[in-house]
Length: 405
Image 1 (cartoon, rainbow, N blue to C red):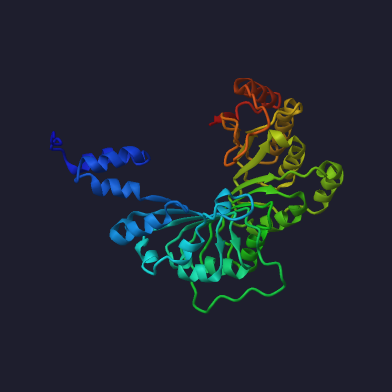
Image 2: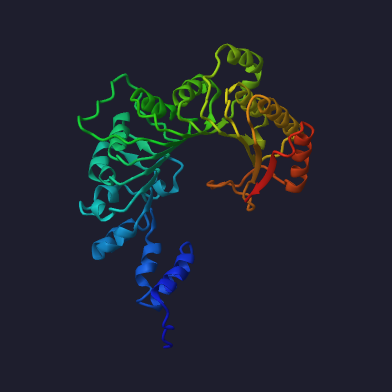
């Protein structure tokens, strides 16, 4: 076997760092040289994904080599529940594994900072035995998780004093009864959340309202909420008012609601009577635009018109190109006209139209069924139409068109 060239270890580390996202190559490197093994392990175990197929193997691995747990910075755990889960239908879930995790497991993950939980039922016992003992978490994601009560979320939240970013999507199993939420134990150090990202078609605004009620929102500078129901517009207004002193970045998108078009005139006058609070610190706004939901666009643009953003400098339209709609040609002039109105009242410097297409294989991201639409977007033609619409309003120097893969 040919020996490796005699090079400084720092040079080998630099090469291995360039392969940090290429796990197959890293595994081959681990077999090639003992000298490379520590650096390879650092990258291989930096981000770990666990589901029913590998959960027991992972805990056995850490039991045999506890030092590997020190490399883990991101832990993604995906369970399964519900009638639409094929894993559940085959009896393949993480329930038994989660209940059998040894007490030594959480301390082995002492450098873990990012915890992503998906399709998991979480109760107080699980928080106290496992999740709540991962005290170094700075980024928590709950995706389609079921929490047995809101108190469970409160206990989980209070377990992470270093938490800075909270992401919640499709988690709606909050307790709806009138029972008051338990108070925090005396002396508990509570996190200062800086970034909140949520999908609000479920009742996830309850979390943000609770943060405001507990005065735990005063450090939030970035807030993102997608699929906001039209019926929640007043809740959104109140939340933005509470976040106004510190909020610098906002991303918002409305959900689908077939009845909204009938209420549009009255909605406009209602907003005029119930004005939003000035968002004096806000400098960046992103609006979600979906070509398959053209009917929602007027409401999205109406929100922009009614938001007092005196310091706005960057406006982004995040356009998701799905189903083709015959009204698509009218979208760009409407966006340009609204932007021109906003530019007259703000120090707007930059407008970005970021267009993203559905996956090329015809399957929507994260879905298990074929996408029924037939997106066939000519992005060069789209860019030309967008530039023409914004140029007609004298905004061409501000505009940047980006096709995002």
